[in-house]
Image 1: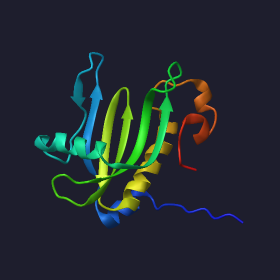
Image 2: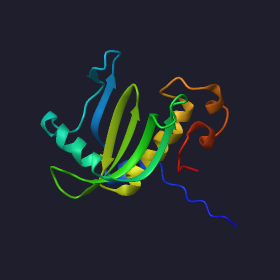
Image 3: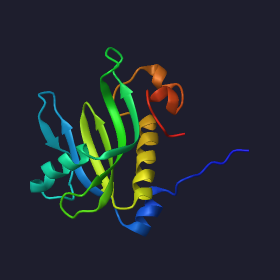
Length: 152
């Protein structure tokens, strides 16, 4: 006998616990410059503090794809990180989706909301990959697509 737990949908959870907050949302161009891709929920003066806090946070979950030519180098990752909000204090849970092309980070004070968003992003990446990938990655499930994942 096996037991499978299913998280409620992100929309259902945000209706109950409030929306996700966007910390960063940008793309990198060919010259390496950063271009903002959409609105964020924090003021520009706090961006550095949040980046520092996230880098010092505790990674709880991760899914990633490594380079074919240099396996130690990641080309895409989605991670769930617990960190301390540098402005308001208290624990928050961030979902960072990073690729060679850009980065988007959202967070929430309630972990189950961030967990559901993490799983949504991991599954969404398979249906609409943000990078051009080898066809063998697209032929299987989560295990074939990601080099590392904890989503079943």
